[in-house]
Image (cartoon, rainbow, N blue to C red; front, side, top):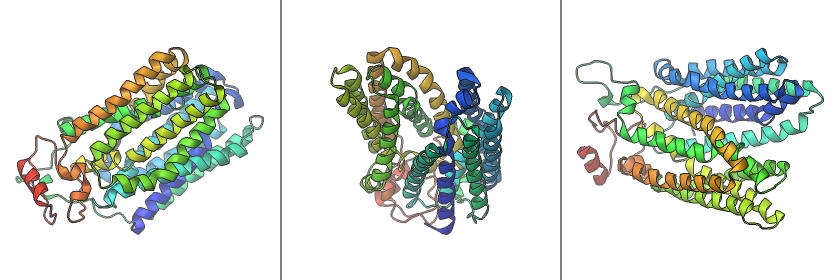
Length: 444
């Protein structure tokens, strides 16, 4: 990695480390430590998520117009203010407003960091750059959660204030590190500038006309709904109600999930980076379907308590394996589909889809996991198999290089090798593709 990319990855890891200090304990902090009640804690968590939905539609255009660096610095400062304010909040209004600022800041950081990774990587190195970011973020979250757990004491509100101040400090470190990054110029593609000299087309209409991107967003929604949206809601409720596992075991299961990601990430990367992205994603659907079947055994198999506990931990571990396969495929694919003038908007649109799935997932999965045990498992086995179907359909919309970047003969800083179908594609100068890819480009 170049110096700029190393600093971006460092800042991203440190911010995840800060988030790990507070995310697992936010509900307990608001409901019990500040004695604001479960209802207020639910509102705070909802506002934290809804703030992301409010700001992400505007984030992409700001990134494309101003560049990702200033947007990231502003977002980091806002998140630091929100975290610091939440640490001192002892009333409903202050807690809700602080959560809104914190949620908005952390949400904007995601597409800004993703766009910076795109600008600082090439088509040949982008897969590994995103895999490294996912690895470091999970490592940071895990270590932050473990350290934070040793510091908190529900009888001492000051211990939680310390956690939020550490989180705010990590966001400030991210902003400071980002400010030292010398960003390269955004990739310039000749075909993004029309022959008449007018500004290239951009905006929501262009994105919605790009069939491959729309299909990827639908696929992304199902992925986040069927996995991430269930971790701390439906699957946790199902594990405690149907499988009868101890709530403390959920912490072990989440640790197993993180451990699999950290241990397996680069082993998986070697196996998938030269394979078809769409087929790798399709295999994730199969693995997750099996994970849900294992969860079904835990709650419905009438086995011993030890077997049920082992099955639930295995379920979380299998999800981690799928996540490790997705990190070098989905996020780089968003970047490779994006026209040069819309990298930020494409990343923000995908981040918005993720937030929608994370908002809908608990609302649907929570009640089902707590009471409708059989239908819950069947539903999410089908959703997982739906990932496989959607991934294979998406593969038919991608060019060979988009689906398998290793086909590119020469590394390139090109962000996109195709534009939405409404725009013609001309191969950028200096990019040499093999005969099969040239033929595909010419046909499109």
